Amino acid sequence: MFEEKQKRSFKEWFHTYEGQKLYVSALFLLVPLVLLLTFTFVPAFNMIAYSFQERDQFGVDPQFVGFDNYKTIFTNPDYFITFKNSLYYLVGSVIQQIVALLLASILCSAIRAKGFFKGVLFFPYLMNGVAVSIIFLRFFTKGNPPLTQEGTLNGVLQMFGIDPVRWMDAANPVLVNCCLVFVSIWRYIGFDIIMYIGAIHSISPDLYEACDLDGANPFQRFRYIVFPSIKPIISLQLILAVKGAISVFEIPYIITGGNYGTSTFVIKTIETAFKKKQVGLASAMAVVLLIIIIIVTLVQKFMFRDESEVEARESAKKKRLKMSGKGAA
Amino acid sequence: MAAAGRSIKEQARSGRLAVTVLKYLTLIVGCLVVFIPIVVILLGAFKDGKEFANTGVFELPKSWSFGNFKTAFFEGKVLLGLRNTGIILLASCAGTILTGTMTAFVIQRFDGYFTRAVKGLFLLATLLPNISMQVTVFRIVSKLGLYNTMWAPIILYVGTDIISIYIFMQFLSQISVSLDESAIIDGASYPRIYFSIILPNLTPAIATVLIIKFVSIYNDFYTPQLYMQNEKLLVVSTVLYKYISSTTIKWEVVFAGIILCIIPSLVIFLSLQKYIYSGLVSGSVKE
Image 1: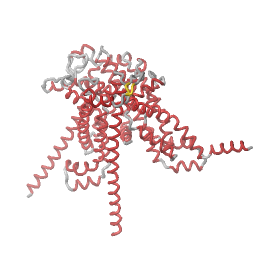
Image 2: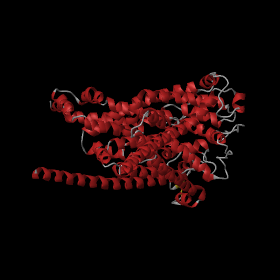
Image 3: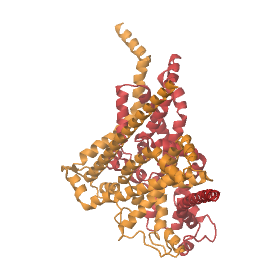
Image 4: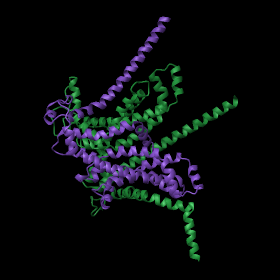
């Protein structure tokens, strides 16, 4: 009797919204949470643990080595050079932002065939990374194994009567890195253009009108109206560029395989793990990358919380002014 | 006075003209920079072996034959790559939509300590750098016996995709809770609310996620390269990578392969242009 009552009440409870909430939560979250733990958090903890060990791929007989792996990353020039290489990409993304901003503001002005230009400039972003890399292998070199004909870029130069240049020259890592940065800009700039176009379109048209009434030229208009309005997005992009620069992987991995002094931090990590099979050291590198990303994210959160607070305060002030204005009227 | 006024006006007009010319010039140069590297590939794809080796990059092919495309498609395994990529895409999109909307539904609608903790976990996971995490993910994937199966990329694409959950959550927060409440008054259960109210209302978010998923999975190189070494499991990216890592390269066939692999992206871009712009931008605003 008592048991039956208990049972019924459980059943009843099960059908109440409280009970439903519980079983729906459990049911709906089961798979995502299991996946999240297995493929994100367990490997993350392993990564931290392994980073203090010397271990191979199969984890046979791992040795605890303390901070030795971390010391290697920051003292061995073979590893440390990758930080230097990411500076190329950092400078590259500053250039990328400037060019993207220029193109976006042109695309926002009165111009014909806007859709066409926008589409062409954006399309590389949608292209397969391996395809892009092979296209630029041909762009810069004769190909490997070498063909007799010059690559695309030298073909263009020859049209203007300029002697061909060896772009992928092992003796000139600065040039090779610059070429790779160019490819990276070529591939990703379309996205920034679209983002800046969106930001510029969100500026109130009243401001433009006022600007036109004052007879400002396009440069003044950009300097005093557009730039201040989209400054938060630009600084966000520049912060994210740090993340991007340290995480460069695909383009140099496919085009040069990280040779000619073009290795990046992530390429080095992957090589260390899967070619040299030093999982401990690779884990330490992954942890370093994680720490850099956390720092960047914190900076970003900190700066943008600040700015949005300032904005909120200002808009509140404006509202108050408006109110008082109304009151006076 | 009048003369000075006119000259200022003229100056302004000629200045405006110069600016316009400069604008178009910049855009045209930009487009050339995009086009030239691709056009060379397209021209090369139509040349035969000898012709390819002996003509300059900008020389037009003697005849426009599709022989190289045929070779790349069948012998060059582009067909296989497209098929495998297609299967992986379908499975991971279905998985992401189902798990993503469910997770977002629970987190967004049932506010409590537990759901807030779950939300925090997902937020934390966005920080972890995907590629270098593979150092330790690899061991787990092979221990689960997923190495060299299509399940490896599918499960990773579904299980580590947190951006989609955020997009779903953002959309959900715009769907009024009063919809749920009126359904509750009518006696609908939560699963019923999810399937007949939330899911249909999330259609625009699902479209956005599908676009982001297509671009990222179709173009992903590293996951398939690491987890599917089997010749039968080649996807679009790894098919192309195989070409350049082999010692006997027929460049004209490689170029035809590249063009074939770009065509699906081009078709999707041309047909969904508007949605792609807005979809990808909204995907990036997760931070």
